[in-house]
Image (cartoon, rainbow, N blue to C red; front, side, top):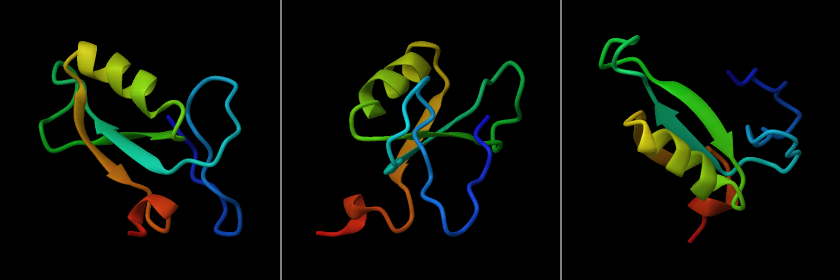
Length: 76
């Protein structure tokens, strides 16, 4: 589970060893353990969005992917 960053620090990607700023929230749950409305969150940089998403999706855990609030992904 990702620990929230203090407000003045950027959110960091959840991929092991990555220190890049996160621009995506991968919201997921394990249906065998969590009620349907519960969402856990992994954070991802542009490089790891695919691999983290694929890992969760292969297990049937991935529910949605949304931009991190304030990320450049939200800018058109």
